[in-house]
Length: 491
Image (cartoon, rainbow, N blue to C red; front, top):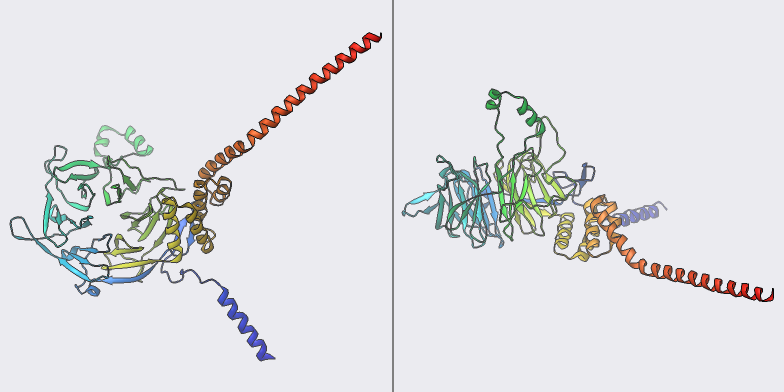
């Protein structure tokens, strides 16, 4: 009897374990993943990415990295690492096998030349390698096999001071051959160079907005005090990237601004969308005092597929992924010694569906693979961005099976239903996602839809009712007139 009970109990336990859904890979993550809800509270999420491997220079057979500062991955999976301390560019194929190491190149005068503390790296679609050779005050452009193409240095313009010190930090180039440079000590914006005409000017100039307190204090100050006051100087840009349409994504280090992420069109105007509950600037809740206090410092940005982009916060070592409307999809990361958390992260790159983060403090690269949750969120966002709303709804509903408290899923379903003109159903999801603006839009459309559906029959019925009533009154009057005439005849 006891043996039978034990067997039945074991069977029940087995069936329960087999029927339970596999837990989302959250316990394996050495960090917390989260987003912010309507009330600006951090809401825990299943980990969207998990660390897959950490790669050091010794793993590649090229010796240890020394203060690496940048990484770039091309569309065909070629990986370029800027190992600044060793003044070299390491080129890898998609299998992480070393293709070549570029330490020197033949200058125009035939002499061997090299790099001095290079900080930024970019590779164009035709595989030209752009290196911000900072301490040599130039941008070096090499062919894919390491031969010199050109050097951009010592820009000349009437708008530049005579003692201008050109120290490039980050570089990017668009398909038209225009070169964009973030330079040290340049507050006017991102320097733009034409392929042949040299320095063209600045794009993305940052506007300075003194606070009301600064204005009041300045108004009450004496002339001598005003001369001693610090000038309101714009903040430098920190990083740049370019999407397939030629729009420049950039981050700034202005901790007092809500616009630290920008998307610049060809005229330099910031056209990034900021439609989320809160500004797309990394963390919105943080400590005011102590270690790791203050707003996020976004030191790098990478454009992903489907209108998404990911920004890297060096202050708290976290990654923030936004959709094309500036809504935070998820954030994750942190500091530590385990694989997957960072010491001094300086660059983030896309590696297919994965992410690669370059950690200058640990001298390694960590590759993150998407989890089921992260993959579903990315795919649903991309499908909606591509206009495939029916497929997006299916994917968002799969996301809700993993996390029913994820507002972005309700919002994503609502948007897709709105695009498909299912306004009444969209209203329900916008209400669940606490999205007032889109709820109002859906409500207006639904009200118009109801009016169009019922206004015609209602007016037809009303007109018929009025006509019937009028006819009744006329017939009644005629009958009454005949009755009175008949009675008068007998009198």
